[in-house]
Image (cartoon, rainbow, N blue to C red; front, side, top):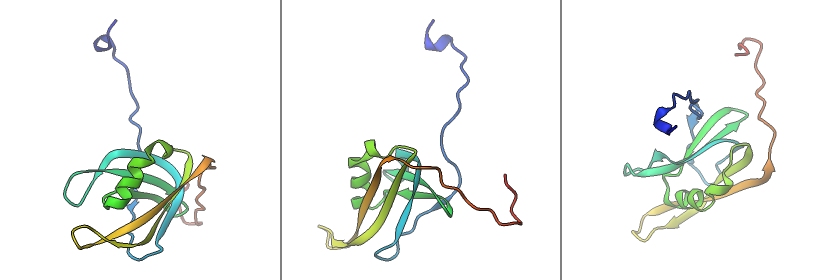
Length: 130
C-alpha cells in the first residue's frame, strides 16, 4: 500500500480567530499559553513570509506576527521552544537604529520551561458558554 492508496480523514490543526497584537509603545507586552506557532504563517511588511505566534490569553486569542526584523530573528532562533501548551511572553523592549538609518523595534521573548495550565476565561452572565 502506498500513501496514494489511502483515503485517510485528516483533522486540520490550527487556531482561528483572535486579534493581531500591536506593539505601539515601549513596554507593551502580550503573554499567554502558546496555542500555535507557524514559522511562515504570516507576512512581513514587504509581503515575505514571517513567523506567527498564537497565544491564548485571558482576553482571548492573540496573534503575534514576526514582521519586525528583531522579532522575526527571535522567533526563528527559538522556534523549537515555541511549543503549544507552554507559556510565552513578548515585550516591545526598546528601539534601535537600523543599518538603513531608520528606527527598528527591539523585542524580548520569554518561554516557560514547562507546559502551563490552559487559560480560563470567565464569562459574564449574558455570554453563552459555547
